[in-house]
Amino acid sequence: MERGTRSRGAGNDTVLRVENLKTYFDTPEGTVRAVDGVSFAIRRGETLALLGESGCGKSITALSLLQLVPEPAGRIVAGEVWLGDQDVLALSERDMRRVRGRRMATIFQEPQTSLNPVLTVGLQIREALPDVADERAARRRVIELLESVGIPQAPERYDAYPHQLSGGMKQRVMIAMALAAEPELLIADEPTTALDVTTQAQILKLLKELQRQTGTAVLLITHDLGVVAEMADQVAVMYAGQIVEFASRAAFFREPRHPYSQKLFRSLPNRLKRGVSLDVIAGAVPRLDQEFRGCRFLERCDFAWDRCRAEVPRWLEGADKGVRCHLYDPPADRAAREPGSLANAVASEGTARRATPERSRGLLEVKNLKVYFPVQRGLLQRVVDYVRAVDEVSFSVPAGRTLALVGESGSGKTTVGKGILQLIRPTAGEVLFDGQALTRLSERELRPLRRQFQVIFQDPYSSLDPRMQVGEILEEGMRAQRLLGDARARSKRAAELLAQVGLPASARHRYPHEFSGGQRQRISIARALAVEPRLIVCDEPTSALDVSVQAQVLNLLRRLQEELGLTYLFITHNLGVVEYLADEVAVMYRGRIVEQGGAEEVLTRPQHSYTQALLAAVPKIELPAERTALPVSGRDGRA
Ligand code: SF4
Image (cartoon, rainbow, N blue to C red; front, side, top):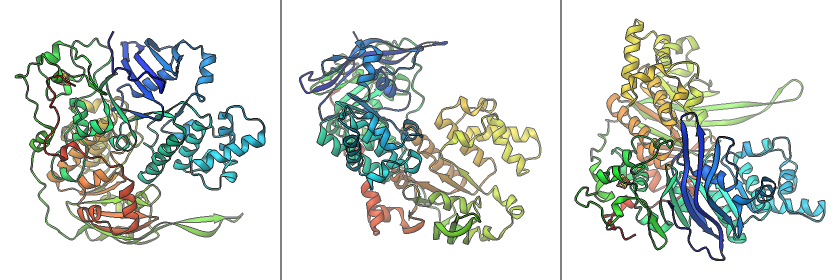
């Protein structure tokens, strides 16, 4: 029987024990082995992080534990799931309903979709409470729970509907609901992915505190190494339906062993990698409707050799850690491959520091920009006040440079971007593009200039017309701007653009939905490039992507800047991205810039208390690459 990690310590304090779980899906193409022999255990008060990129089986593992695998296509074909001494997979649906939300609770990424919009939050938490003597006591308990998750004015919030709460507040309500029944196990599936960095920090702190008080075991599903560093006691790395590495948090961050784990670290952007291409995990997770004869990571691994092709790596286990890779297996053909240390690999990626373009006057200059939205009241819709979304914002971006605009959601970053692009007409102030005041131009005068400043959004899917083929999407802008005379020239240019962003020419005849998130973002970049812009406003262009795909997109943006001399205004809340890419940083808080300056200066010696708080909120990862020598010792197989 194939095993994943051995379930450790099945003693009295083991809350969840999963043994050789297999969940398959029947599809027209064949049987997809989404979860293929996964084993782990979680003790009381412990957090196990299940880490990996999209499509590797993390969420299906969680759904399997809850017996919520979508039927009829999906089915659990083998394995055991024990919650305490209860055999979960032997329970009927009726009994399972008593387990879900009571003994096993869940928090998902999108509280919006998990909360019922027509019920008050108080009632929703009330429903999750186990038997309470009377309604007054129940109401008191709900208010206590709202207070315990840090919701202010809890008695009033009892009667609020979900839409009246912010994203962070809704996630707190989800946590209160999940904890109402005092579950033994909490499954948190990307609980902070949709939140900004400061709200994320508050939610993670809250989860830790509540866990400390209640002793709940937590299965944390995430693709974010920062969240793992902050929260996990144990880490299990999943790839293509299997666990490929298991370790304590300290051991994992000190010495990630599996080549996939090492690549995850190497693809993270940070200050030390400025001017150097980030390592990317080329290719994709393999199709899971095949029988594997070798290693599943084979096609993406830098260390693969003949044995990896011919033999499925077995699970190698040591005290509280394990790995699935031939590099650590005794009969390894040692001469075949000599994987260098991670530190060396990073060094060999290239040392070409970015040549700093000469400072010039700002291609983009923003002076005292104000964007106010009127607040109207009464029958006559009289303007009674203004929301100052952007207030007296000034900065300048020289040609060929990158300015990062950072701050939490709602701080006005995106509104600044829209004000610059004249998608919102500013209330006051000036936007000068190459010396020309865009704010004084009519829409007609702006039209021919528009091609010089383009935008890339966070969600490429909603910004690409699903009914148009990629070729048409790329040619649309050229046609509108009357670039290139005839259809043949435009089609040739579309093929060139696709090559420039690393997509095949055949992509022209396909639709956006046929591409992955990272590929769609490449299409958005190609579309922006089609009209030969000089400035690109990048609005959170990588925040929806897995870390390795993010690395590919960041590498591409950096290369295009070098080749084409592009100027970027980079709107983001990811400070790792800022450290890696930005020359200058402007920090926004409540519509104003509270600090700005050189990226190194602002990020290492922040002056404003808000910048200091923002930096403190970012989960810290100590990268193995920052040390001198690294892993891959222990290739003798002694795990
Ligand atoms: Fe790479 Fe081979 Fe290890 Fe697989 S078994 S991760 S291909 S070295």
